[in-house]
Image (cartoon, rainbow, N blue to C red):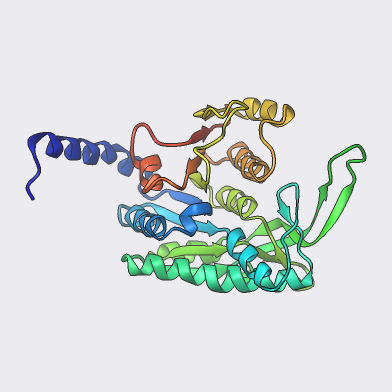
Length: 295
């Protein structure tokens, strides 16, 4: 069916609006933390894959770091176990680590790779263990409360270092890296690492133009549920202090803040439940979600 004059003009305006962003971000690296509903609803999975392929085809270098919390919880439930969290971090004993490695490095990673490839991309799946990509060490977290003591939550790690060579090589040959958030310790032990922390550190090391975090909320919300469209480092510190940012949003905002403080130009916390949220954020004037800058 032919477009009407109004519809055609609207379509043309949208396409033309993308041009300066394509020019500005050509050759730039964009790290995308992929998680939430965008990973579980078929329509959103397909729109995400198309978005990533399009960004690659117009000359950007997308790097996907994925989570897999719901999928891990599903398998734990089937095994008669229940996920436990402290300060947004999954408590990971040896049995849980086996499940995490199976789900993240196997099921979820390969599904994303396959999805991107089906839509015309050339994706390669990695875990942080491949090629010594992510070196990790044990993470201890503060339990909160009056004692605020450090708690050992098992095989949960934090990023000690990242060797970006394998990612650079994939970019050189026009592949799209898809990274599962696991790392390896000095003695060869495997660590489960929060995907938000991996994405933030990966963006820093790769000197990314943008870090984009897909979530199940419109972005960062104030205490009344209103969207905060733009935040500085100073404002985020205030939101931490008054408890506005808490729970699962803590590692997302912490890693985003560290990233922009360490050279990443901007970070975007966006609603992954919106179709083509990635394209809307990168290639339109308005964008979606919350923009985080250094100042």
